[in-house]
Length: 239
Image (cartoon, rainbow, N blue to C red; front, top):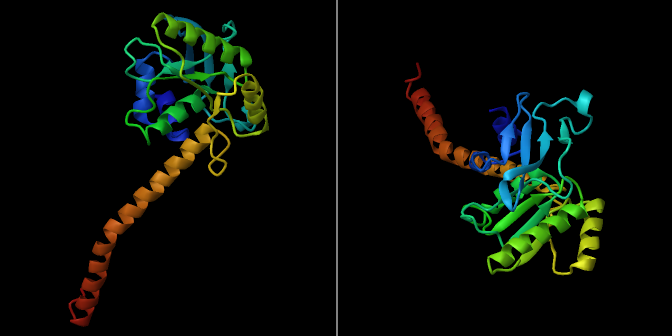
């Protein structure tokens, strides 16, 4: 419940997406209430290759500007990271990959894709590199391509959803110098530097629209009450 509350209330991730990740056994909670993002082997989903841990308690004194615990568990396997596939793949390997700097950014990007596509982006593998790690990028490209080859299909597209900052841009430039067809799925500069900032900004806009609609709906009633009060006073009917 604590992880659910943190991801939904603090990070703006939809309850449906959180529940789906938990059902797919890539999201868990430890006894201290920290979120555990499991690194499942893309070729054997029964194997856990590592864990990214995200705290759910805010403590700036202990964790600095970030305010929460953030770490990779000891003995996590190099070249792997948190990943999940689009729902409804039914055992097939996705033909598209999108890479991110953190599990929450990967989840946020998928959650935002639901605005354009019902159920979220299809036929895609979402991968967190826990930073800007070429070894994770290379590993998942190689493994996914090999999986697809066995199924008689090919990798169709690769995208980098890394932060819109200097480090992120350098990483994209370096990758694109070797693989020109790789896309930069850049977060909006107006909404924030990463995809979770973008998602949270989007949620605020949604709340604003909802409040605006609510105000519009209540105005006629308010206006009616004002007029009724005026008539009561005018006709001596005010209690």
